Image 1 (cartoon, rainbow, N blue to C red):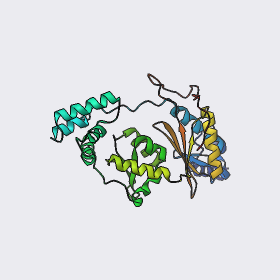
Image 2: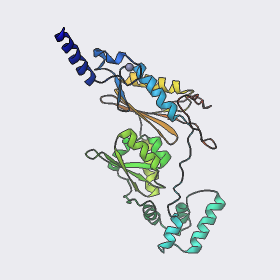
Image 3: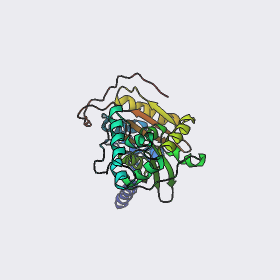
Length: 303
Ligand SMILES: [Zn+2]
């Protein structure tokens, strides 16, 4: 009897060191045969696609809220004033650029200063670097400079006008260049999904447009866009369907700008799913786990 107790205690101790399904209430996870299988979501192990789907649904429920505009960092010195203080601009020039911006109803002040011939693009880029206290990096024009771009979905780069320019695998740091303003919410999302640190830098606007155009023309097989999803359940089903189809072993997901970004990874393949979130609503929406899923009106489209 004593030996039996010892055997059962040892077995239990050994068993407790093995991973258990992270889905609350799942008992299947304790079965030995399932341990080699299963999937990882946000670094947690789940025994089956069914358990992953339930967990993914909860993540989506939290992320599928309306997109709120990123609050502008008010503490930055306005670009025009910064250039004025550095003697790169005259008061009258700044006034007329601001007037042109107002009468046109938009555009960035830097663009207007260049358009009116009051400043050059390199001057604007330098001022942007000072404004955000970030290094200015050379324009990523060469093909080789765009290699790191594969780290992020194209649509996110396009939305934030950002470009990953270098990824240090040893230190797990991604260097991301921006050409208009540094978006820290995007950097945070990148850090969460890639499990790394991020460093911001700035680069010229024309170079950014050119790089995005080049990347836009390239074929992107590993990126799927879903615009007309009807419910969080549908998004979770779609994700799990893609996951099973490609034999993915790990999933990570994060809300980033207008999208919910899901990355599925198999041994030698990687696919990004982008679910477009709903438009911002006045006052914003906070969705909890118990809230009803949102139903965007747009028809379903995959590209
Ligand atoms: Zn389970």
